[in-house]
Image (cartoon, rainbow, N blue to C red; front, side):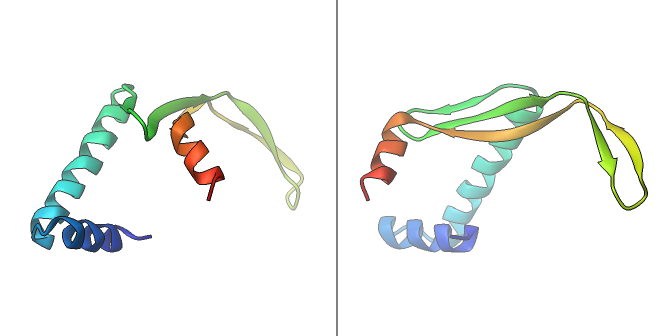
Length: 92
C-alpha cells in the first residue's frame, strides 16, 4: 500500500477531503522522523513502536577486489509491532 492509497482509504472512510488527510499523514511522518532523529522512540499503543537501533562497527569484504573495509557504527530506524498487532496478522 502506498501513501496515496492510504490517503484515499482514510478520506473515503472518514469523509474528510484528501488534501486535509494528506497534510495530516505528511505531518505524522515528519513528526516520527524528527523524533527518531533526536533519538526518541515513538510508541503507538496497539500498533507498535518506531525505534532507533544501533548497528555496531563491522569489517566487510569486497570479494571482487579482494579487499576489506570497516563499516562504522551507525543508527538505523526500525519498527517493532505490538503483540496485539502481531496476533491480528497471524489470525488472518
